[in-house]
Length: 162
Ligand code: GDP
Ligand code: MG
Image 1 (cartoon, rainbow, N blue to C red):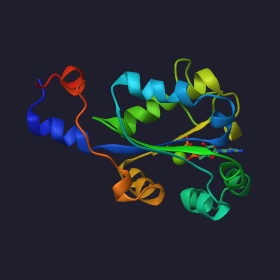
Image 2 (image 1 turned 90 degrees about the vertical axis):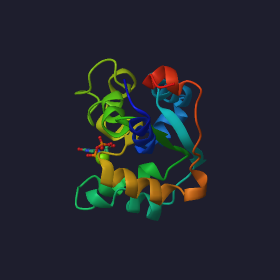
Image 3 (image 1 turned 180 degrees about the vertical axis):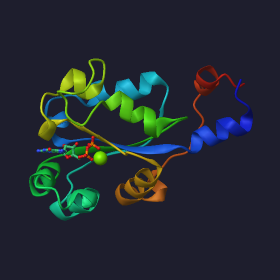
């Protein structure tokens, strides 16, 4: 059974998740949020925003040399995005599992991209790929006052601490 200090550490792990404009336009917001929520992860920040092209370029800075970079940034800034921070034990790595492989053709059934997307350029969701990118992306998209720390009544049932 987890001890109190471990639960505390679990609470501190956070990842940045975004529903891209295709996911929003296709009416998949609730479907995607429910997969993270039902798993037992905790939503600590959420907003709807249309990122500027310049902002999209910052978000995808690491991919700036890739041939699809310009189109990708045009796409991310083409409409509303749901920006979120999710918290929980192992949420960065497991969030990526829930999302599935970058190319939906290679994503397993049962994953978000596997179940709900077909091509790599329209793969509906973004998730941080590690602790450093999670930290950077959360700081890029949210101010610290937009992150809400709270205790969920479900936590003792999810983590087995009471
Ligand atoms: P992710 O972390 O799984 O989202 O994948 P990456 O960080 O490698 O790439 C970021 C995003 O760029 C992906 O989610 C895709 O939307 C897009 N992307 C990646 N590879 C390709 C590609 O080969 N072609 C196109 N058109 N888009 C790509
Ligand atoms: Mg990535």
